[in-house]
Amino acid sequence: MYIVMGRMLRGRTIVDAGQLRALVYAAAEPDDGLEHVYAETDLEGAGTVLFLCAASAERAEATAVRIVDRLLAQDELRGWEWEGRRG
Image (cartoon, rainbow, N blue to C red; front, side, top):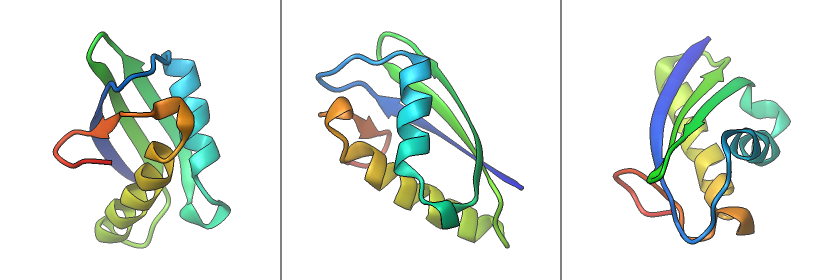
């Protein structure tokens, strides 16, 4: 199991930690190996931790990027960004 941490910057919508976790699970596909999601929201956005089953750290990182890309495409997160890169 690998842990991929990141920070999401809030866009035009507001979601709480529970909503964000549900959105991450909805963005993940069965083959992604997503086991668990931790999210903690604040005024600027959210800290996120994805727990992934993967063959290597590199594959876990690549999978996390794909999940986040799908996550940021959801209407509920309009305008949100993954810190360091635009969604």
